[in-house]
Length: 87
Image 1 (cartoon, rainbow, N blue to C red):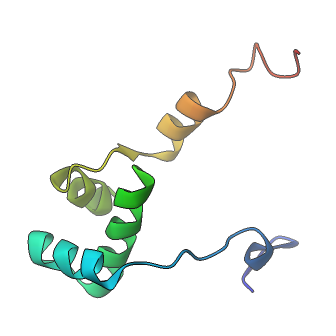
Image 2 (cartoon, rainbow, N blue to C red; image 1 turned 90 degrees about the vertical axis):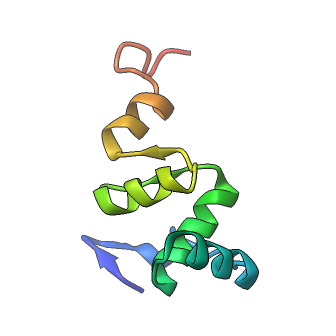
């Protein structure tokens, strides 16, 4: 798999199957390519997309899919620094 530092991303990331009908609908709705349609169809099922790609965020918003960039994701889903380590 793809290595980042000494981490094999293949051991961390598992591909999800996608629905061809969902992809087709996304392609028709947004006039996008196959890759973008697959990603957006999966994001729609997951009810959100985290990406640094501003074009993908724009497309997701057009499809009424919630979007986050990395900073927004961290703020929303990771505990703040003053609560880390406290139980």
